Length: 352
Image 1 (cartoon, rainbow, N blue to C red):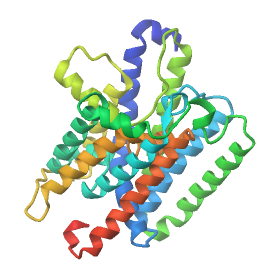
Image 2: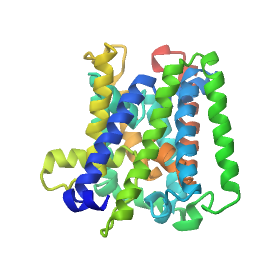
Image 3: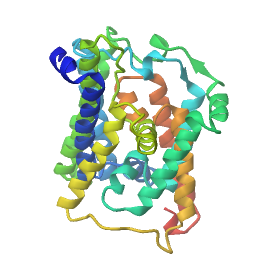
Image 4: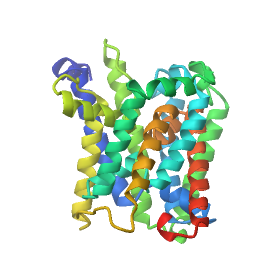
């Protein structure tokens, strides 16, 4: 690793890591139909179906692989932003709820919109752009004062206060065992609930991509004399970085996030082409455009409040046992399920 750093430098290695991890994530996510929105909709309808099985396969794979590496000392995520920096419980709760509502309205979370964009879905492209612009405005634009005010309502210190378990906690192997048991159960009973085995394998690769991001960035950071952020897959922050790179290039330096988004797009595009599903999809008369745009706005602001999107907080943050990430993804589920039930109660099937 030191030789690679001396030859190419840390930014380039992080860029390549982002591209590779993103391509694997995009291909596997498209192939498996990995989607938190679909999983929450199934559960809201009282069904333990294929979409829920696929999400659980990805999530538990990420947790088991990351925490097993932490437990044996092969990975140290204590300096990750989701653990080391000051967090916001109010942001996790309110932002998570907002993201969940927006995810239902837009028929997909940030990662799903990016994956669908690669297949030619113009609805996903436009909604994703609205999400990204709102996230940028929430990070450093005119919405940032409101975000900071809400996030400041209830803060928690970084370090042990944000970690569910310490690396040396006797409860850590118990948690790993429980997640591994859940994964085995999903693999055994998933096909009986309508989840094809190939899709379950694809979902597991999604989880492994999350692990690869943590492990790869840790390897670079551990071998570098420079400060390198240990990080993994997330989409709102990298999407804003990628957008700013396109607008201001070449001023934006190479990074994991700048490589991640085009990597996911490329991987998903390859999967869509090989599956024969690449085609232009537009807004239609029975598909209300304003609902998608409002959902994108809610997700953009909510993700910046919650500290990440459904993958950034829910998968990557959840895999390192960041307390605020678990609270955020729980609230995403609550917001999404409640919204799905309410829209269904309105009696218009197009709304669901």
